Length: 494
Image (cartoon, rainbow, N blue to C red; front, side, top):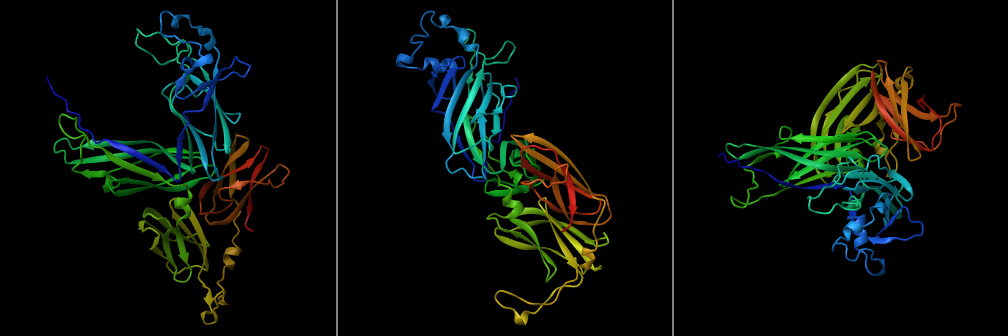
């Protein structure tokens, strides 16, 4: 007989979001049948089934004092569970700020449920079903400092893959209807991580090295596109993976030992069963900050005086980023192009690129880092400062750089298209702007107008002044309250 030895590297996970807090909602629930109209509620805790709630009552509320004696369970009137029952709970979100995102986490219901937050249906029984299915529901728009959560549960129907028991146990009269597993509320930033996973490939001949692949889902809860960096830490060593997300997008990030030496583990500590050795456990730490963490605090900055581009990191951790630089002449000709991967120290900077002398009167500098692009207008004729007469508040100019060629280079022919959807009373719009020409389209202003041409007020854009390289396109998201007919326009340059 062959013996099979299972060798594992086991991991615990810490998935951290900027200032995220998760609180379980175990106590303080109330429960009643939807057929009841007199306001009668039963005290409840979660997890529980409806039958569990009823049998836990004490005193005058106790309906089943000897439920497990004799044939008492058989005499339970199961017809009362043919209608939905309602679980309800109040909870507070003290100090809730406009920058926070709030999610409800349901780890399993029996068998399906309509979920309402402050009276608004946020998830329906068509999608929320199953005792071992986990749901994370974004309720940012409905959340207040004082909240009421209502869960209307429905029993399983014939054919539903419900919870089962060994055959000598009585079948539950309520078909295990209820909130079967824990419920939590999570407060976080715009970017959250979930479902981390590590795949291990072990050298089975020597047992002296392992190659790891790390995966995690990352989700953008906001209506604005964002970019940033996933940071992982294993045994005190860090690895980095840039990401970019569209509004409300979820994607899977993956990084392996082929991408970073941190995930090539020498002399791994294996999890042995207790008769053969020590059961070891590794801790993997994953972190994704809100979009400000990388897109706003890690930047490429151009110095007009020495024509040098520096990468600046305002974070308290070192970052590893991909930086790209392109220089176009006002004619549209690509004059310089370069890209490199940079490691920027915590709260520090490094030199990234050096611009060559401009061969045209004017040009454009496109700098990209982690999916975020800055654009600078260039001139072969630089500013000349009067440093001798500089004061603490002003340095006079002896000569001003000439940008007339840019001013005369208005581009016609750019196109704009849109798609939109209505979510919780807001119109979410995705704009696609295309520059089909062979020149740079500089500082295009975008707007939404009514069919009669009136500017729609209160529109929030991810970026409403954009510059496009020749023969390129980009996506811009925006949103406004309510819904009305509109058309997207390119206004040109102010």
